[in-house]
Length: 245
Image (cartoon, rainbow, N blue to C red):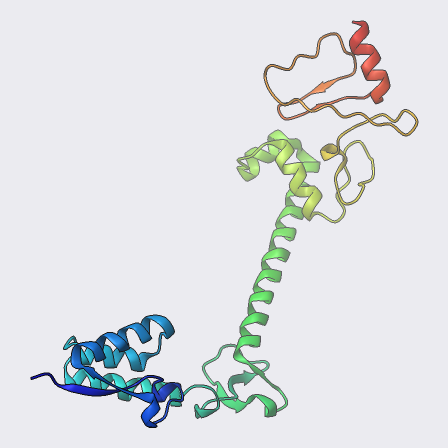
């Protein structure tokens, strides 16, 4: 003999009522399947617990446990949480967060800041200290470099990189750094890092060496480096020279 359950077409947790028009008789298997479909469609935990309980996938103890834990969890969300609207704070000049206290966000006492803001400030101070340390070290290195030259500098400091790399570091970190050619920087870029061009009216030409198959033969005043080819002619002048060779 089949056992029938009363199933809410619109579940009570979704606003359904006990009105007869919202009730339907289903077997246990049909009842479990109905809640499975509701769970897959809407994702409510109540339908998941009902489906698994009716299908004997979980026992009565587990049903009670999940119902209580889910209900309490929902009660603790938002304004229902006893800690809602509060933040951890520390004294503004504190060295760590060991003596923190909790206050309402709208009534933080004067001289106190949130631990989030405190950690943000500490991180900023750490970065600033590291920046100053780097600047001081590069300034000292620059003095050695200017006095003894690059070869002796390497012997003294065991610097592992190239001279070009060192000069780039000086240009970035040493405020009083002046390139050897005496030219001023443009837009913060040292002269040795700028692409050299020669203007011809309003035209500029800079040719990039894109691969080993490119060959420039018989063109004067070219500086060929590992990464780029810098032309010192205007676009029209360069075109004429290449085709006249």
